[in-house]
Length: 394
Image (cartoon, rainbow, N blue to C red; front, side):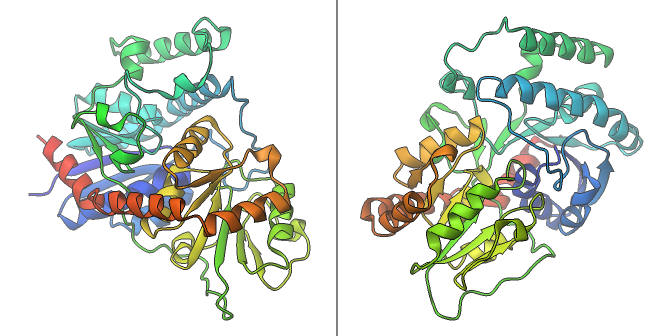
């Protein structure tokens, strides 16, 4: 007999989309899934057969033109404060519905604090989702920061605010206990071989790789009729408003053997990028999986979801990271010979074109990508993730 499983996530596409294949697989197996996210994700959620439970969010919308990434040294604290504010707003919106129709288990994103609190209050088993690198005593994102100060006034303010919020919910959890939840299982949407110190994680963490999701409505795309190799360029869906970067990309591939597909996101009007030659397309949105199926190179912000989608079809990577966790991914791309990284402020048309041309001929990168692709294909995907969820059901 099927169970009721609640997914609680933050609104970001890079956090929602990797989980849709898991929701779809659970529905296919006869379970009932309720998925909490912003209203704009309802169509994607319902494509899995799940029921959407929408909420109003504090997070920036897909079209907000003023979004800027926090500075490197303030990124962790700013992110934690932002996601705590989100939980404070979201929890009272979703709790009444889920108490009226109690789930048997909660799958919550690492940064969806509302899901963690709700499960604690209702005494439910949990599965924690990771679309960023998993942390343990052997590796953590904070290790990338030299001298992170736990006595920093902003971090102290976060700890105090978290302690107060958790206490208001009637939970006897210290901030440390809250930030290191012991879920029944952790799902990481990439293979163990991509994880820093991957061999130091036990079977508590299921490295399931990317989970194929149902087709989503949206724009269509056709590969170039002239057969040129395709390079896809994107900075993702959040910190993606960088018109100069897109102009550099147009200049890099104009008068080249490449066909460039540039997705600027909904914060930018493609007209701002300016005129383009016939071998360069500029769109707000593209069907990324369709383009990657025909691509020979992927230039991106190094978000985990896009990295895995590219590696699934054997496409080399050029990382232009915008945030701390993307820097971690970019460094791993270099370590594993999956491509190269370029700092955002160092992107030039000639440098980008030279890097793309070099990587396209690099046999070490071709071998590295082929090896990691095999790891991706063998990770188990949505069926293995659903197995892990089912194992945690009472």
